[in-house]
Image (cartoon, rainbow, N blue to C red; front, side, top):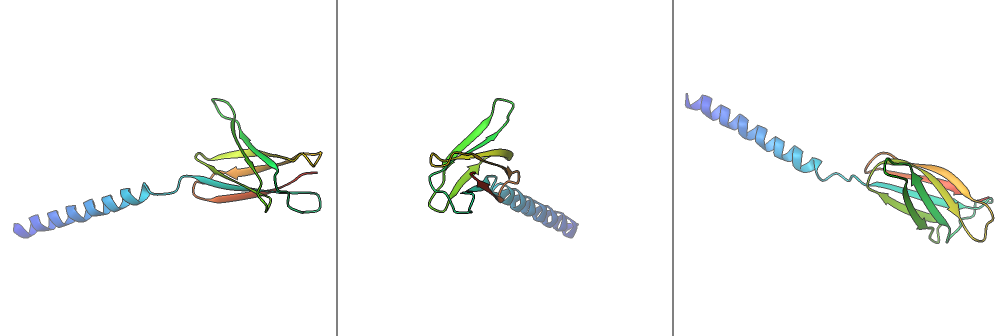
Length: 118
């Protein structure tokens, strides 16, 4: 009788321990989507100081993020909710607008796109 009770208690303890481990590790996952937009000109040279805008439609209005490219022509974005964004890049020294699509639809994953200003 004691061995049956001990087996039941041991099994319950193992199940409880595994449940705690599973719940505690699933809460720590990175749920942020990371995106990078590289802006280049028609020759492929990077453009620093370009304004990059991400826009995605939402039930409560468009979700918009904006950043400026660094010396490497990159603008980075950290987005809390997954979305597919329309990308628009402009620079005062260039007459055109660069457009593209950035898919930030997998939390914890990185995505990038290169946009060419014409």
